[in-house]
Image 1 (spheres, rainbow, N blue to C red):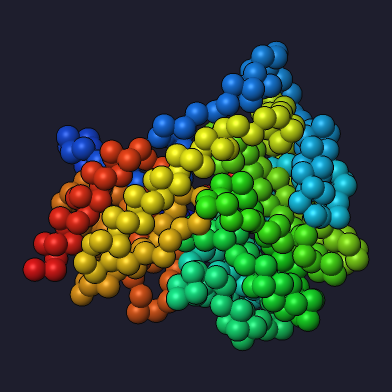
Image 2 (spheres, helix red, strand yellow):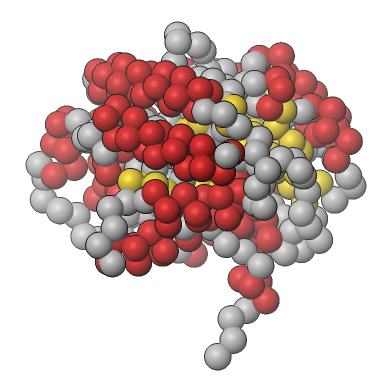
Length: 394
Ligand SMILES: Cc1ncc(COP(=O)(O)O)c(C=O)c1O
């Protein structure tokens, strides 16, 4: 039996590279996995108070409210207001991870043939759902020469009459950068000019290095609707709970029908995981000591990653400022980044994700490093990468 046309041209690089790695592992090869952003797979753990909020009570096995648990929606609205958004709990929808929020936001917005402006490189689920819902490809580049900030001129050039939204991923996966207020303001201006909504993915808003500040998109958008997507997965170290949300900031009531469309999608799938939603208020309103600890550990791993990568001949890397990703450039005479990553896996047993899986400027080659692993493992992986590139460069 055939698969649908809809699914034929879409893939999800982050997980797809794993198939071959698992096969090699079965054959007895040791693999260092630096491909997936799951902190729990490394030396990070869920805080005790979150465990207690969810597991110290009788397990709730019924469906939940389609839009999400009331007390959790309230806690999310309060966080959004602290972040400068103009919202109430009625503007919040709790989803099965941020992933489902991405699905709802695109599905309820875009007709076949329309488009949303997606960054390249992007977190691939945006391209995935855009294609899935029949959208035309449209994108803008992030500018590597400018610390991976969005290329605002390129956004402006690529808006057309079928464009419905601009996607902003800040802090960014896969580059690990944080956007400046000036750039964000320019994006808001373009959205206002063309009557677009901004889909702002702020999944990593609390994992920021060097004392830098994250600017929530809604806080600077006075006359433009912004949907902010966030999640418990990364900031609160519970990716397996599958709890995320979206919040609609719409001070001029331009997007009421759209929000109702999203709520329809939420009702149709009944509810997100009910029991785990009891962890949301505990997370957002409880102690954030784990964040301080996580940032300390990750900042050191970021430094190791940045230094080691830039010491390798033929590799250069912009310094990540947030999250746990680096997106180094390969400046060597190679066939493709996909083959580079595959050869590295087969020859040295290290798994990264090829840059083409996220999209990149034509003629450039990159790969994504997840630097969640402890220093010893990271250094081992970079030793192997250095050896591998040395063998190419001779
Ligand atoms: C930028 C970004 N958005 C959304 C997600 C989805 O995460 P989840 O579905 O676990 O909330 C991820 C996961 O890696 C991500 O990196």
